[in-house]
Image 1: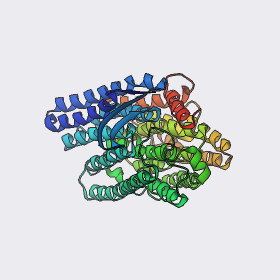
Image 2: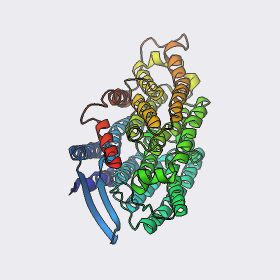
Image 3: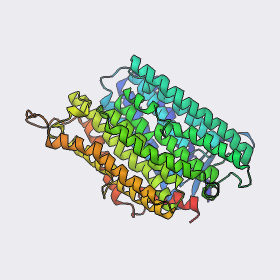
Image 4: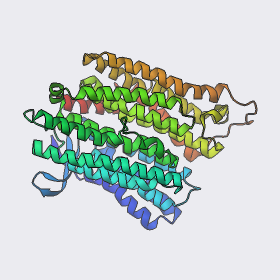
Length: 491
C-alpha cells in the first residue's frame, strides 16, 4: 500500500538546507555547530517517524517533478530504502558530534561542514529514489560533494587522491547513466517500485550488457575488485571523512545500488534463469578474501581499515548474488552491521591520532592501557568482523552461510570461515598489542580522548552489540531488513 507523504522529500531536503545555512552563516562557530547538529537531529527524527509505516508494509511516496511520462524525480520510502536511510541519518548525527571535536584545529571548517551535510542529503536521496534516474542524479551529486572532503588537507597527496577518486567514480556514474538508458529501452520504465522490471522476453545478450554495465557502475563505489583502487588512496582525508566514506555514504551507496540492480531491475527469478548472479558471487567472494589478505600487510591503521572495507562490502554483494531469502537478509542487515563496526574503528583511529599522534599499527603497543575505553570499543568492532556471537557481524555471517546452503552452493559458506580467520589475523594482534604488550613506560593514569571523540566511539560500539542481540526483536533493525526481503521474495 502506498501513501503520499512529504516526509520522503523532507528527509533529504533537511541536510540540503543545512548545507546552505552552514555556507551562509558558518564563519560563526556557534551557528555552524547549531545548524549541523540541529539538522542532523531533525533528519533522524523525520526518518525515524516513517519507521512504523515501513514495518506495517506501507510505502510512502512523493513525486517532485516529471520530465516526460514515466521519467522524473520522485521519492519512495520502501523497507530497503528506509533501512539505508535510518543507518545513514543515525550515523550522520553521531559523526557530526565526532567531527565537531575532531576538526577543531583544522582549517576550512565552513567548507568541510557544508559539503559534509550535502553528502548525507544525497545519500538519503539515493535511499529514497523511486526510479533509476533519481538514483543516478543523487549518486553523481554525492561524487561531487565528497571531492572537497577528500582533498580537504590540500596537500599534493590529497589532490592526487581526489583526482583518482573522481576518475573512478565519474566513470562509474557514466556506466550507470548508460545502464539507465538501456534499462528504459528494454523495460520501458525506470521505476524501482517493484521487484524485477526487466522483461524475461528481452534479448539475453542485451540483458548481459545491461547487467554488466550497471554492476560495474555501482561496483566502483562498492569497491568490488578490481574497481577498488580509489578507496585506499582516499584515506588521506580527515578521519570523519574516512568514516563518512566507509560507513555512511559513498561505499554504502554503491552496495545499495547493487541491491537495487539485483532485486528491482532484474529480479530474483530472472537472474536465476539467466545465471548472471553466479559470476557476481564469485567476484564478491574473491574480493572478500583478497581485500583481507591485502589488509594483513598494512601497517598504517587507516589503510588497514580501508582494505578491510573493500572486503566487508562484498558481503553485501555476495548476499545479493546468492538469491535466497537468508542471504538477502544478510546483505541488507550488513548495511548496518558493517557501518557501526567500521565507524567505531575509524572513530577509535582518529581518537588515537588526535590524542597520541600515532597512526601506525606497530606504534600501538600499550595504547589499551592509556586509552582503555577507546580500545575496548575497537575490540568490540574487531570481534564483530571476526564473527563473534552477540555482535552484528555474527548475524551477517550466519545468514550468509545459511543462504549459501539454501542456494545449493555450500562452498560459499567456506568463504565466511576463511574471512573470519583472516579478520582475526589482522585485528586481534592489534588488540593483543594494545592491552597485553607494549612499552614498560605507560602513563600513570589513563588519558582518553576528549568526550566529543570518545562518546561517539563508545556509542557505536554499543550498537554493534545491540545489532547482534536483537535480531528477533520486533521493531529493531533486523525486522526492517526482513520486511525488505519479504517484498523482494514475495514471502
